[in-house]
Image 1 (cartoon, rainbow, N blue to C red):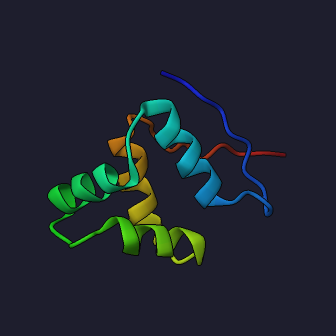
Image 2: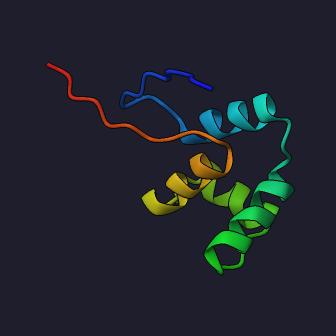
Image 3: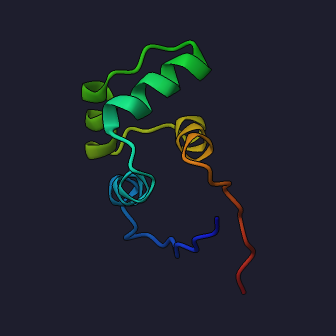
Length: 79
C-alpha cells in the first residue's frame, strides 16, 4: 500500500497519524497497545494522544507508528 504525504514545516504529525489510523481502521487505543507490545515501553491512548497533540513524539516512536500501520518512512532528497 502506498501513500505519498508531502511533509514540510507546517505538516502536523498528529493529523498524519489520525489519517493513517482512519484509513487502517485502527483506534488510538489499539495503536498504543501494539506500540507497547513491540517496544516494551508502556503506551496508553491518553499518553500517545498527548504526545501527538503537544508535538512530543520521538522519531523512533513515529517510525514505530508507521511500521505498525504498514507504512515505511523514506527520506527523499529534494533539490
